[in-house]
Picture 1: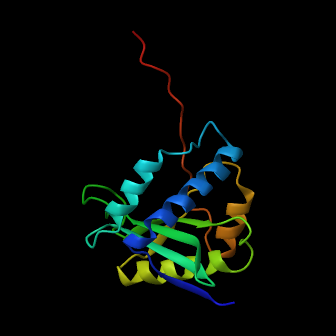
Picture 2: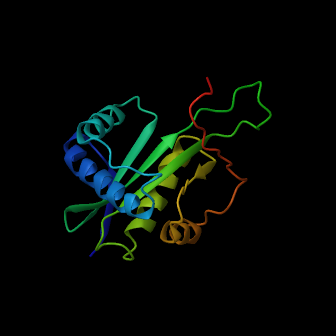
Length: 163
């Protein structure tokens, strides 16, 4: 069966919500201290907003035999401000979801390839794929697509302010 990757539209919102929630449930199993299952209505509103023509988010879906089985969300980032030391390069974040039972069939690779092409058409020269838990599958997937380490993101948990 061939994989069709296309731009998402408003009729895809219920499926996009289902994909986001399935992805959230899978991530909560990885680390419930980092991930959560978001409110269904908030997810629906998000996708309705980002499917607007002037959005800074690109949503692509992958169809297999007429069923949507995956999506890629590409968030176009603002250029670094002139006062920062980073060279001005158009960047984007990518988030990819493929439903259980369809992984390993090239769907994710097709989504990433189409997302990279769509981002490049918008001037993006660097893509980021953030992985915030020991998700070896995601690391293998994005590494196979050519992603690699770029710097280090440090974080620190903070308690409430001292009185």
